[in-house]
Image (cartoon, rainbow, N blue to C red):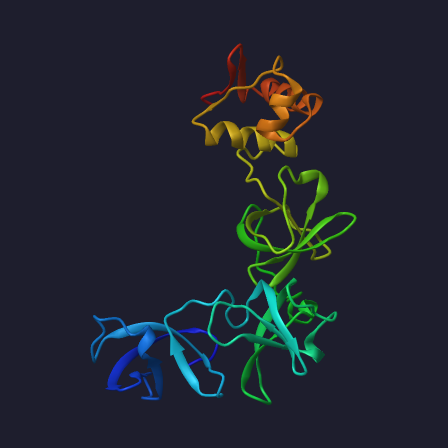
Length: 278
């Protein structure tokens, strides 16, 4: 039975307060009545999140928190007191960030990217905004073009820093971002060619064709593919229409579709752009 994780347990016995669930070693945990469904019966398996309640007792819940152990998430501070900051993570008991785990002093009402771990001294789940302490920089097992889950953590001069699959740090460059993004956003991204220095660069659009490397061209190809092979724009479209549809200036758009046309990847017609069969 692992604190801070989803555990699959077995309904073992009932009490006035709820169902007691057991793991394979017959360790028990209470699932309070408010989380017990009408169909749950003794012997059933059930997936629950296990944590400690406000009285430091191990309990189970069918509610799914917005962060689990060994994960990062963007959470809002509900309150600050003499013990630290308390975050809303979707459960009855708020999540504590002790003062010594705050990279900067946290304020009620503001949101921060944090990491959830089990404090070995107190055996309690706590969060930390010192996220750099929990990022892996070795044994990076990513591949080019691999789809990954990311959380946007910080804006820099080069672009946006992100956390990849709750493990690694990466970067998306400003000139390869074609839609608004915000700190804390959870998105899909794709790994660019791996660098010798071990740093990881990402893009938000998956390349439709291996030989197309220019970001604007990739964006337009993805738009055409997502719309069943057609995009109602061409080099005669107004700058406002182009920007509203693909987020590019008319100059950048014309350059991109010109390159795609030369590679025989698209057709430029009066009513718009068509993906070629090849």
